[in-house]
Length: 314
Image (cartoon, rainbow, N blue to C red; front, side, top):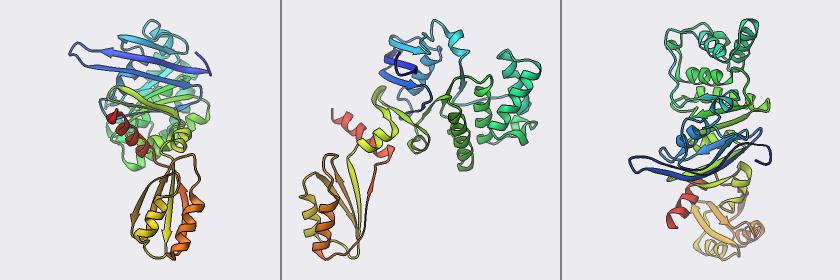
C-alpha cells in the first residue's frame, strides 16, 4: 500500500449463486480521508463495505485494510475499526449509556476507562442530555448518532458507516454532519456510503462512484468538481438575450452548450479555454445589458449523471 492508504480495493468482484455479480470495483482511502462511497441502491456499495469488514469473501480481486486481508485477519482488522450498519437496531429498553457501556466491554474496557470513554462519546455525539433515555424513545437521527457513537467506542482509527443519513430528518442530518466533521478533525479516517450525493458533496474530501456494480469515477472532491464537466458560466442580463447573441456565444471557441431561461444564460465550456471575457464582450455588444457574470462548478450529482450517461453510451 502507498500514500498512507488505510483501505485498498483493487478490481473486487463478487459473484453470487443466483447469477448476480458485482465488480470490478476499485477504491483507495488514505489516512485522514472522509471518503464518500456513492451510487444508486444496488450498485455494489454494501457488498464492497462487507468485503472491507471481512464479512464477505471476494470471488476475485484484492482487499486490504491497514495492509491486512480482512477476510483472513478479520479479528485484527476489526479491532482497528468501528462500524455503523445501514439500519442500526438497538434493544428499545436500553439507554444510550447502556448501549455504549456494552460496546465498551466488548472492546475490553473496564472501570474508569470504560466510564471515561462512554462520557467522551456521549459528548462527541451530542447525546449527553439523552444518555439515560431509552433508545425506544429516540428519533431516527438520535439512533443514527448513537450508532456512530457505538462505532467510536475504543477510539478506532477507521470508521465505516453504511448510509448514515438514511431516513434522517433535516435537523438530524445537520447533527450527524457535525459529529462526522468533529471526528475528521481528530485525524480519523471515515468511510461512508450514500446514494444522496448532496450530503456526500458537503462532507467528503474524496469520493468513489459506483454504477451497475462497477467503479466509474474516483478522486478528491475538489478534483472531481473542478475538473469534470468543464467551466460553467452563469450570466444575467438586463433584458432577455435574442437568438443572435445566443448563437454568437455558441460560436465562441471552447463553448459546448448554451442554455437560456428568461434573462439568464448558462454557458458550458471545456477546461482548456477561459471564455468569460468573450461572453461578456458579446453580451455588451448586443445591448442586452450585463448585470452579472460568475463561474460555477457542477454539483456532484451533475458530475455523476454525466458519467452515468457516458457509461451508458459506452
